[in-house]
Length: 341
Image (cartoon, rainbow, N blue to C red; front, side, top):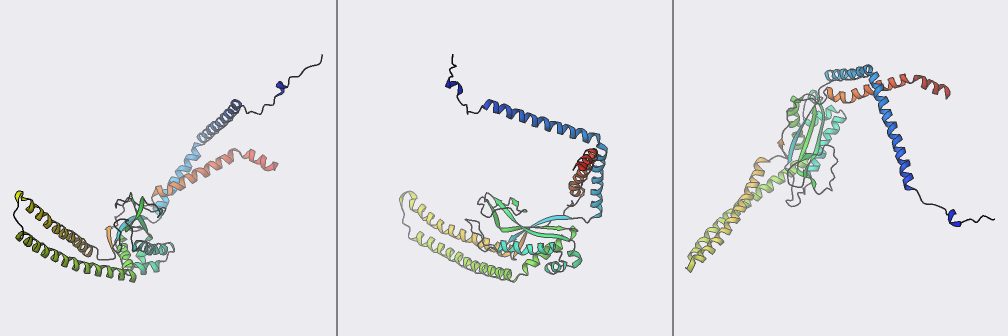
């Protein structure tokens, strides 16, 4: 009898068995986990058995860090905040129409270039300081101050220079800038401050802009004083004319309306007085190109202490010692591999 084959039994199955795939993935992850755990355990035991040389490497790193601290020159950092008196701010957008803050930062960063080039002569001439005092200055840099949420309150200094000018929420403050000085002898900070101010005020373009600003301030003050007197005279004339022409009425309503009209002129006078006071404050408090808002503070902790060196020296010593121990423990295998190839 001939065998009858059923074509349904020879159906080709191209579907993927997800359950089998997940099982294989689980076994692979399990092998990886076991390998990592075993590697961690072997490494831990290896370092525990050789705790003495590894410990000595850490002690050597600490000792070298203190040695470098005691033998190297001390370095200190201090910050100062300037107000840019030449800035012309738009009250709505808080943008500086003059662009002088960016120019000030660029000008001060020329001192940074002199410091990086170790140009003591140029730095001494720029700051009008003695050459021996200038040698103690490591760096002078200017940075933008960032205002978060555009509330007019400084929040942080952009030391890394990674703030995007297109950011509309966190904006650069256009009327102030931060200056950071790194110096070896902190008692020279006052001389450095005076030198930076002289360096800025010796700029002829900034001098011309400041003279124009003060002249415009003076002219506007004269005009405001005149307008205040005119409004005051108008107030008196209006008061007496309206009082003389006032007709009696019932309920006192006419008297009430006349007092409201008189009060409107007083509001204009008060507004002019407020503008006049702001201009007088600008004239008396901010006469120069820049004004110090926050002076240098005397630093109490040096930047290059033992921890400064230890953060790099101790891990370096530890890793080098660990590498030597690993090579020593596997020297036979390495020799076999070397001879084989």
